[in-house]
Length: 466
Ligand code: FRU
Image (cartoon, rainbow, N blue to C red):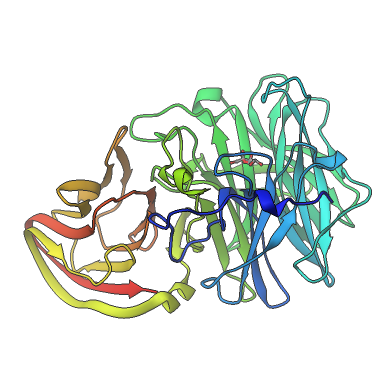
């Protein structure tokens, strides 16, 4: 493994946008969550990390662990790029436990050295650890190389075990039609992998995407779920408004024919800042997902402060009528420090919600009956930073700045569950049937308010978070 030069690490110079309870780097750039697993009493989360600058750069694997999914401890960098198998970066990948050992399977990214960042190739590699802290790269890397009918896009292995064999899915682009697809591989020992071909493929560049990255695959309630991050989908009315998004399909993977048959793709989160998810199982069988609160063609104000990026909260996935429901992990109640509000309110017109620390607050609204309309907003002085409005079975999120609106349809409004951190917001509606993930940047104290044009009754809880 290459050496780190810690004298060149970038440091955080200003705390103004630092999150209080989300995973971030200690300084430097972050993107995708990687290698999620539970190993020897700890949850492990790795992340795409560039420690030398707050800009994207040669990817390392940053690493945190936690006993409870709430309090995270930074560990030494797990993977450093620059070896022959990962000369240009240790790109995204996943983890699996076999025996007493934690294995990471990740993408080696390689440039041809002509200065063109789009001129690259990718392969898949293995690293392992017995203590969950120090990792050794496998001496016979790479373990998988791209098939002949693939373009250079060949990355982000997600590995799992099924019926005594190991499987992994990879994000890929087909050479012939230049469309995104998901490739399946099989192994009996994690070292030697056999291709099983594409399990599903995009049906069109602008409708389903020209590259599918960061696949995740798991079962929920006896159904199979495929989650991935397609690139290149064009907006379709009020859908697919981000540059890229996270989509999912519910269906069935046939382990004999190697085909996945499922529902049409749906967006998982409707906010401006959500991408590149991965999930793991808790020891008691719950499916926990993290995503990256990604910026798409946006300024990242914290880059001026020596860092960039944050993961989402851990979210628990369940399946209800072929819809993925996304709820904040129940462990997060451990963040509650102080109850600010607990009681009924009648909203008629606009009113402020007074809390102790508006940027570190969890808010829950339960509506006795679906309101005619309801608005929740976050403002700094007279400026509205974020506004969420329910009306006519639609949730509309408005964010200050360019390209402000995002939408989703819901069946009435039953509840809202909102987590505010220093520079992010996560909104879960109707028991997690709809989600919005947002970054926001406030340079003045923040106020919370609610509004309704017709009398709207709700039970409200507000907790100050540690
Ligand atoms: C998604 C992604 C992955 C890749 C990683 C590189 O955000 O592009 O496909 O492995 O980021 O950092």
